Amino acid sequence: MTFSKPITEIIKARYSCRTYQDTPIDTELQQQLNNFLAASQTGPLGTVTRLTLISAIAEDTSALKGVGTYGFIKNPTGFITGTASTGEKNLEDLGYMLERAVLFTTDLGLGTCWLGGSFTKSRFAKKLGLHKDEHLPAVIATGYIAGTQRQLDMFIRRSADSDNRKPWKELFFEGDLTAPLSQDTAGDYIAPLEMLRLAPSASNKQPWRIVKDGEVWHFYLQRTPGYGKGILGLVKLEDLQRVDIGIAMCHFALTAQELDLQGHWEVNEPGIKTEGMLTEYVVSWCS
Image 1 (spheres, rainbow, N blue to C red):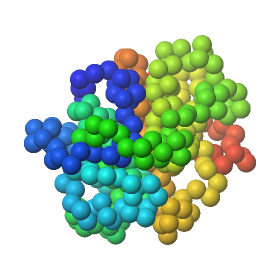
Image 2: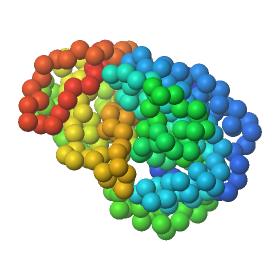
Image 3: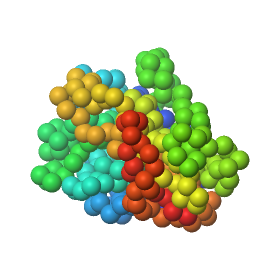
Image 4: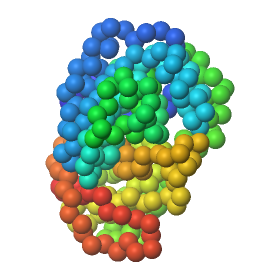
């Protein structure tokens, strides 16, 4: 996959855009995005995914109203939808593939905003012809960024604390989940870890925890107590924190690959102590 700019620049440029121009996406850009989505079929952990660009209509936007800040989305002209087949790591794979699409869309000069929730019975599911064994935990609003960001956008970003990220000492560790990792010890992986730190997450919870174990990087999910149970006015949410881990994996891997840091993903529980931490092992990057 080739971007027109360094992936670090694209990651830093991406933000949750809630205000768009009421202008259809150019046909050529739509084609580039459709070609990219059509080629994005299997996640790094083997899940079959299905990514699609659909044109937005008034009913799509109105269907988001009342779902937290999503109701404030204004004038999106398209939505990127992603479905994943049932499987052990399906939501992680889908988060990874959708974030690749978000970064590609950002590189095209378009705005994006993650919308996580329960869309299984939504208009989006009907448009896609969602299969009974497929999951649709999120959609991505997209379109041309409005020239002047509304004050409401700024208020939402401040309210969600979207510009703030946890410091290194709370996210990255060495050997186990109690010893913070220094940047000196991170070595060549400083940039991949920093780009991971900038990844978006549901309600900005940043649930990822990474442990350096020799030449292996273990990814853990730090659960937020009670998160996803009846919040945002929804009866049930998909496990969005698993989607968040996939987003983090994407930022880490794409940056590592751009720096020619060779590695691959493996699921191999390392046995690091997690009792009483609400923390669970997900995957490892083996270099």
